Image (cartoon, rainbow, N blue to C red; front, side):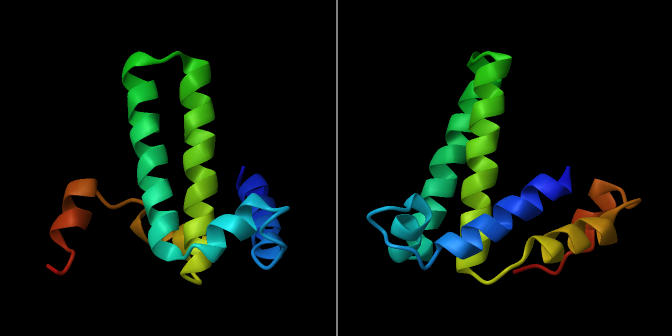
Length: 106
């Protein structure tokens, strides 16, 4: 499964510096991290709505959009998928309640 995400991450990296008139990734990246983060928020909201009121197909589509835009945001902030997966690996086997309690307050 992560092979697909790794390929998508590589495609996003390659397209970030492409011509914004021919690449959605380049156009979105040129607008900066704040705009990309806003787009992630919009896609997250659409995913929630699909989960609550949509069909399975709608949820699948919105979840794909959310993952795509999250990867664009991670690339903009120079965070790799490997770093995110390593964090998930670190948390594996830890209760979500215990993990959250162990976080440092902001």
